[in-house]
Length: 307
Image: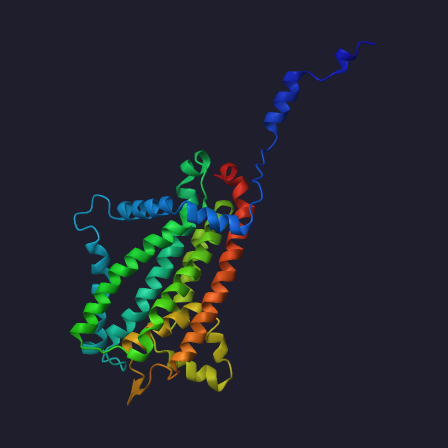
């Protein structure tokens, strides 16, 4: 019996192989190596941040001035509406709002941009070998640069309205920024990977951020809801939101008005209380960042196929 006739035709095998789904499995890279790779490719990270900044205002005449106009317009509008027309009970409400709004703008812009960054950069993801996490971190870096630019408006507003920051709390600001950047980076890395497989993530994020914004004491005083939660022994629910702690720290250090005859505005906690809360956020964010890198490592092997 001729066994050669019983063997499948090579062309048939090739055609069947082509029909099979291709699953690319990336080699396992431990977390420390991933963190080390991010450091090794730090120059690439800086270059991508610059690219994000250039793209943001490409062919724009005013360029980065637009980053200053946004919070400045908020400041003017809220000053006129809530202090001159509607007579908001919160003194210097525009300053109060801006302290929290700058934090939120950074956080929401970082997450929104990072979530779609892998998909938007599909070309280089499929062709160039580099730590893909850098794409998400570049979005965070660009958002941080815009935050620093917008902070200039806040500083000028403090000078114009002669608001004196709380000296005993001002040293907490750098630690708050570390917590904010680390927390945003953790969520950005995770969401950028998930969005490759579930494109609804970017749309769901818009709804989540909307609800998250109103769950954070930015446009209303912390004590307005905090007193009610405290009476029901549910104040801890407020601090489950890490952004609340960061916003409160900014408000306590820069706005620094605890309350007036109309009622309390900010909690009268000691600097050490804020320091402990910020350290907790930093610790939790660090754990989330490690988890995000692990999740990213499990998902990135099939990025090319999904893209």
